[in-house]
Structures are given as C-alpha cells and as structure tokens.
Length: 159
Length: 384
Image (cartoon, rainbow over all chains, first blue to last red; front, side, top):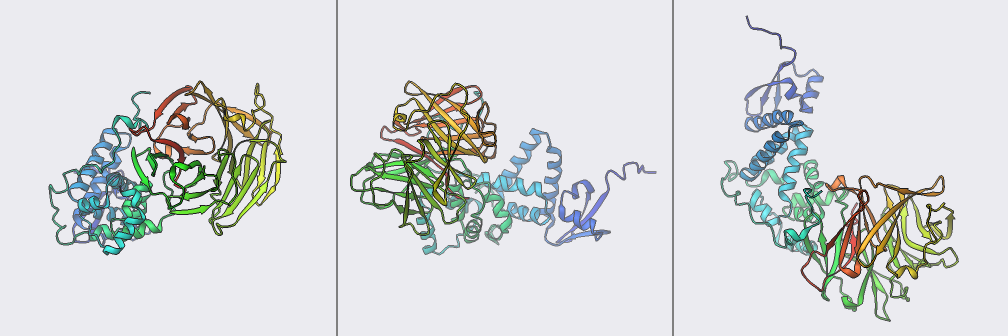
C-alpha cells in the first residue's frame, strides 16, 4: 500500500498546454501563477486546467523557472545560476525568450515577469538599435524617412 | 569601502565611446522557429511587458530602445510617464563648440548639439540648471542669454535686459509640477523673473531688493519658493504673488554666525545651498579649506518649531550640488550608496564626493583626457 501521508503538502494540479500536452504540477508551483490561482478560486479547475495561450515547450520552461525561483530565495548561487540561464536563452534563442516573456505575462507570474524584464533590460543596455535588431532578430519596420527622423531627434543618444 | 563597485571612478576603464563589442553568441545557434517567423514575437510584446523593460532603462537606452522597431517606438512614446533614473548627468564643455554630458551610470559621454545662436559657446556661461533646462548667460555686453533643454530641443530667450554681474548669481529653476513649465530666474537675490513655457516671449519681473538679503539659491518645495537670508531666516515666496515674501525667523544652529553676504560669497570659503529632499528643506553648508578640500554640514528646517536642526545622516539620499543647483536623489533606487554629497569645483574641473558619516572626501577629476574640458553643472533629464 502506498503511503498517502504527504497528500496535503503536495497536491498535484493537472494542466494542458495549447498543443494538447498534459502536465502534472505541484500545487505550490502552479500557484505562483495568478491566472491559475484565480481559476482555482473560481472553482473552474476541477479537472484539467486548459492553457490555450501556452505551448508545451514554453510551459516546460516556465515551470522550470518557477521551481528554480522558489529555490533561489536566500540562495545567491541559485540566483546566479537562474540568471545566467536566462541570459544564455536570450542570446542563443531570443524568439523563445520572447515567448517565455509572453507566457509568464499571460500566466501572470509577477516574480518571473520582473526577472525576465530585468535580464532583457540588462542585455539591451548600451547597445545600438542596429545591434539589438541583429542580436534579437527583430525586423526593422521603419520607413527610411521615419528612421532618419528618429535618428535626427535622438542623435545624441546614438553617438 | 574599497571593494564596492565604484562607478564614479571612470578612469579605470576609460571612457566607453564606442558600442560594446558584439557578444559573438548571437550567431552561434539559429533557433528553430526563427527563420519562419522573424521578429513577430518581439514586435508583438504587450505594452505592459515593454513598460516593465523600459522602466529599467536609463534615458539614452530608452531612446535607443524606441529606435529598434515601430511597436517599441510606440511603447516608449506611450510611457513617458515612467520615471527615468534621477541620477544627473555631469555637464561639461570642451573646446569652443560642444556641450557634453557624462553619464555616471554608463561612464559614457554624450555630445549634445547646441542651439544655433549668434553667441559662440566660449562667450556663454552655463549658470544654472533645473529639470532638463540649462541656463546660459552671455558674457557679451549686448546679449543676455537663453534657456536650453537638450532633451526636448527647446530654447527660451531671456528678457532683453542686463542680467546680474556676469550672470554669476543667476539662479534658475523650473516648477516641476506645472505641465506648462514655469521658469524662475532669481537674479542676485534681488529680482525674480518669471516666464511660462506657454508664452516664452513674455517675462514678468519682480523687484525684491526690499526684502531681506538672500544668500542662497532658491528652491521649489510644496508649491512655494524658498531662499535663505543672511541671518538664517527663511524667505518664503508665493510663486503666484512674488511680491509676497514671508520671512520665517528660524532659530539658527548653535555657534553659527551671520552668513556672509552674497558678494562676499564669491570668496571660496563657505557656501550655503538650499536643497529640497523628499519634501524636506535642507541647507548644505559647503566649507572650503584651501583650494580643493571640502567638508560639508547639513541642516534641516524644522518649520513647525522654527529652527534649523543639524543632520548627521542623510540616510538614503545623495545630494548633487553646485552653487546654484541642488538635486536630491534616492540612492537605493539607482543602486548607489546614500549619505553622500557631490559638489562640483568649477574652477578645478573636478567634483568631490563627501561622505557625511565618515566625513571622508574623495576628489574625482573630470572623466575626459582633455585640458580644455570644463565642468559646468549637474543636469537631470527633467522627464517625469
């Protein structure tokens, strides 16, 4: 017979990503998300909670970050580790990073919103628009006239 | 003390004038989804997320951010309400042509184009600053000067009349709470000139020579203007009725003599600089020992009890001072150390950092390798 002694401390929540994958997550981790918290409070979460805006790979990333974030409290080493992972993701796969930011925003996980924004802000510091576009693979959608006008207006910040 | 990251000491790394080298990592791996849908996700980030990023950037970074793509440009334009770092720029001029800003956080120099004007820069004296505006007084006989805001690229001409003696006692400040911006120029503690950005050609001038003997700069605090008289009384000026001056008889600090008058103040001995700091009125008394050694005492106005109280600790505040400009900044908000006073020694092209607790003074020379450079002022961006 399996022991059920820790059933209260680690209740499992079942979630389904937009591409149909099902995740089982400890309640304490899932509740970092204010969206999930609200859904559970509204009692519309008896069975599987659907997350129509988050794909499985991104959701996996979010969970991983949430767990690490919970561990990192008062732990400088862990904090550093999480940060360097975030930075590595930003450099190697900026598209996924932007998806991560969107997912964290959708799930309303305040701590991770702040962290991902901070890493990105640190990354942007001192970089020219051209370099930012190149590194993050953002398309320059200004017309040449618009770009010239913006450059003229803010010239001092570009030199 | 030594191991703290010292972002004041820019000489260590030299001035970073070019962009940091590319990390080299960007091209290492091309992510799988990227080539199909280039950039869509970054351009579609919701405004609330973009604001989270923007609020963590200082002004030059914000402007670069806004030049990346359209949606980021819109985001920046829509969140001008976000506070930018209050840490002031160190303004200096080099040679005869340019005004330059040293960003203390970035250790980087920005060149600002000066407005087109007849007077060459060498004949302009940068007399004061406030909320993004610099006051330039012409040393040419037939010209007065102008106010210039390099961040919004606006200029306001001064009234066509003789100003101060060499303009050295001109004190300028703008009212931060007024959306139209009201400029006040206190001329030698004798005359108050007012002008609204709404109608920059019209100046109102109020003679105040009858009222006390103002020996400090003037500050704006809680809707009123304040200046210090030579007997430590505090002159309170109603900005709507500048003829109405109330002198509050403040009990002076112990062992404090009368303050030398305005003209004597030019001798490098003592200066009294009023500071508005989180709603409190402070006096920073700058004491010059010899040419370059500076100590500082701080007093706080206890208005209900009408007395000056000596402050031993500024807590989380940093004060950036010149004779005519005072800026108080919350240190922890910008990752710096508080309880410090920064004071520009205009004649010596350096500024001192004075720690009020330990009473230790550090001199920082101007962070450019150029004999021509002259430090003029501290300047905040004036953005909200």
